[in-house]
Image 1 (cartoon, rainbow, N blue to C red):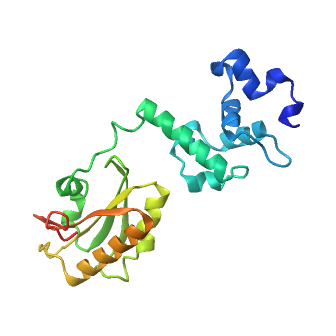
Image 2 (image 1 turned 30 degrees about the vertical axis):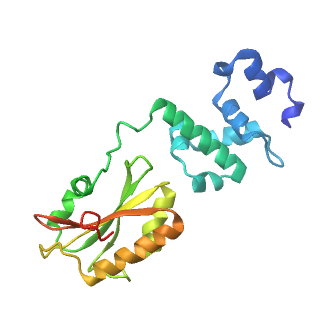
Image 3 (image 1 turned 60 degrees about the vertical axis):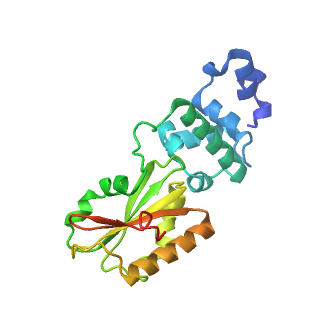
Length: 222
C-alpha cells in the first residue's frame, strides 16, 4: 500500500501536524526523514525494516557507507539522515564528554602507552574528529616499518569508516632509540601526500620507545 492510499490521519507528516511529533512511532519519524519509498515498499515499511535490523543508538553511529548499503536508502536519503543524526548528537552533546581530546604528542603517547614494552614494531593510527577527539584506534601492521607494510589504503580506510577528519600515525622502536629512520621518513611522506589528496590531515607521526618519544610535529618535520 502506498502512503497516499492511507487515511490522512495515518500518514506520518499529517499525523505529526495533527497530533504532535511526540505521538509518532519511531518508524514514522524515520519515514519522514526518508520521505519516499521504493517500488514494492512504502516509506513506513522501509523505516520499520531498518529499525528491526538496527537499534536507534546504532543508527546514530552509522557512516555514509553504512547507510548507503541499506536497501531503500540512496545518496540523498543517506546524507539527510546523517545531517539529522549529527544535529541531534550535537544538541545532546552525545559522546563529547567521553572521547579523549588529543592536543599534542604527549596526549598521543598517553593513548599509546602499551607500545612502550612491545618487543616488535607495531604501526598504530589514532583517528580524530574535527574537534581533535579520538574516535578510533587501530593497529595497521606489525614488523619492521617500511613502505610495503604500511600502505595508505590500509591507513585511510578506517578514517573513512569512522568519519575521521585527521589522523596521527605512531609506531614503536623496541631498540629504545626513538630517532626516525629513512624508512620512517619515507612512510610519513607517503601518508602525508595521500592524506592531502583525500582531505584527511596527518597531524603527527609519533615514534615511541621505552622511556621517550619522537614527534615529527614537535620537531617541525611534519
